[in-house]
Length: 503
Ligand SMILES: Nc1nc2c(ncn2[C@@H]2O[C@H](COP(=O)(O)OP(=O)(O)OP(=O)(O)O)[C@@H](O)[C@H]2O)c(=O)[nH]1
Ligand SMILES: [Mg+2]
Image (tube, rainbow, N blue to C red; front, top):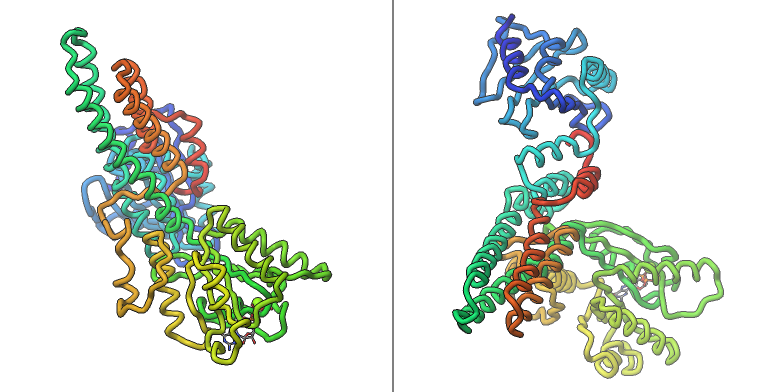
């Protein structure tokens, strides 16, 4: 037996959990590529590789990069020349024996190798099964496992940074810190419960109340961080709306730096919604240009366009409403105001873009959007905009950064601050702050916050320590579910089934 085969056989001995299946899957996507990676994990992995891998032996001395890790070039049962990397339990991604076969990336080659693994005792891995095993063997907690998938799907710099921080345990550490605080309060409550009624001191109650306020604050910060976390993970949805011919498509083109949408002076040029994703300074933006609103139309195609525009508006994080000269007639202006107010009443943010500002000198006071906005929409954040002025794009970008990072529509852009300076004051600038990016985590943070709040109200109202401890235990349970302590098997299955095969 060669050295490689000895190593493989040892791995088998080290791993005799016969009731666990050995799983195999492609870790690289289908299609032709220079290389493809096939991953194998489980108690039989070593034995299977032992049967199918023929090392070149003395021709290539076996390199040994680190403990539990060996890599050897050889032949995979006469199919291809491959490199086999062994990550021996427990020093592997899943905590089991893991073997990675790098072969040539042709469909037939990769498939033949995977088939040979299956025919020799492995079974095809389910989506996310490798990561699920990593979670079960304690290699990472649930929040970290979820970050693996986010990192794979990350398309922007900020997405990558947040997912990586979560993978490194930033969120898990923050959760653990909060859990420790709650455990501390629970322990104190236990002591108080052991004491006799006569020994009860008001300062103890005050102490518990103060500790709960501190937990409340940190949990609230965690829950609130979801606004930013969601925007980074899912992208910011911006919908451009306004009357026909207002300059909506020109605004889209300016933001994307492409002639993406057709621009013409014929009102009704854009008939369908146009969606485009851009990366702005490391953030993902989903931009939607829409057909002109606030007009009556008998044309069924135009009507459908208006319906689609209205649907797009419903899901916007931010609406850029373009109001340009010439303004509509009084009835149209009334409709336009109503739509703006409806958007605001749904709790959505809206920035009024006073378009075609370069034409301002040529329009009368009645036609001037700025005068109209000052009189009727003075509470709405507003900027003057011309598609012909480069500095206006810089100002708009500053406003968008500030909206993402600080949740404000700060329209005073007449400062000398650069884009970088004007951003970076929000939650993301606290690089050590844990940021919630998944709605599952947000719901758990909210739930646990609610329970801590109820516990604090209970203690302030003089209710029994017993009741307060019960409420706190529920808070602990909700929080612990974030990192996956004490979560049901069904939830674990649901989370990992969203992963891709091979991860
Ligand atoms: N002077 C000036 N003209 C502009 C500006 N923005 C757009 N326009 C012109 O206004 C006309 C309409 O622009 P579009 O961007 O197609 O307007 P729209 O709102 O998308 O129009 P519809 O798709 O028909 O609803 C075009 O002739 C543009 O060149 C601007 O800032 N200044
Ligand atoms: Mg258009």
